Amino acid sequence: MRRYLELIEVSPEGVAEEPDFIRVDVTDWRPIDVEEALRLLKEHAEVYDSYVIQFHDCYHEEGQLCTLMVVESRARG
Image 1 (cartoon, rainbow, N blue to C red):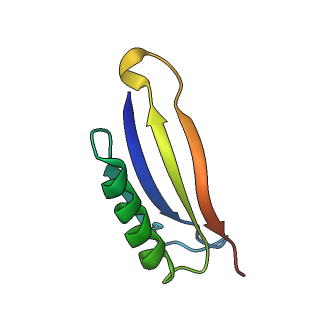
Image 2: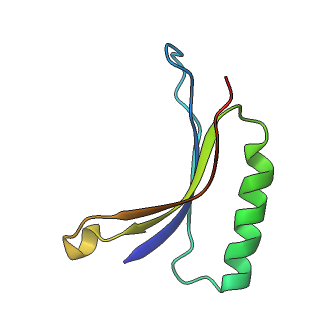
């Protein structure tokens, strides 16, 4: 299993630009370092009107489905 911390920009309907996506592999990180990465992603997310920050536990290598846990989201618009 791999654990990712992800920030996904949610673009409004009809916007042609690809939304921003940041993925950090935190699989072997210490909890304090994961907390710091989460803090930095939250800080960076302030530039977006709408976004989702989530943990993505990836089980593809094991032939299983992934799980997602939303940490924070915002929708403006």
